[in-house]
Length: 194
Image (cartoon, rainbow, N blue to C red; front, side, top):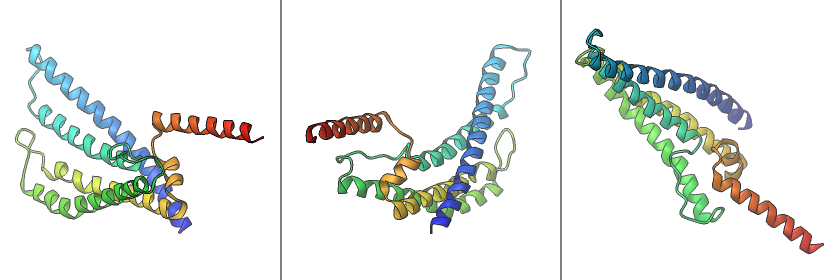
């Protein structure tokens, strides 16, 4: 199981790096298309390209869905902090979160496949782009969400929730403050006991 986790971790880290590059390219393309739309409305010498509106919308959809997958990997999106940190209900909600993300990823793959295939029969209005390129975002995002959720769950099963979160979660200020306060408390307790 440890080698499965190590392999999945290597795969996911590589996929994450590729996703970061794809997201950067999508963001730059999105910004360039929006700027062109604004400039072409105000400068009559530039032609109005109606497909730029469609492509900027499509890039935005891919940005959202691929960014969501990375958010699942690092627990940046789906966090519920309703219980004291480290309590059983807190641990249960964190485990439930990762299981729910896995289920959503599976749903995206299963139902997204048919949705993507329906894009073969549709074309974008201005650009005439087959809509499968846009509709397939759910399947692609679902695959990433499943892979990332599986790593989180496997890491939790092998090493515990705390180890998984320290390895995969994006640190937040509250965690750092809590960690510093815990370290100070340990120092004070050691000083009092000696």
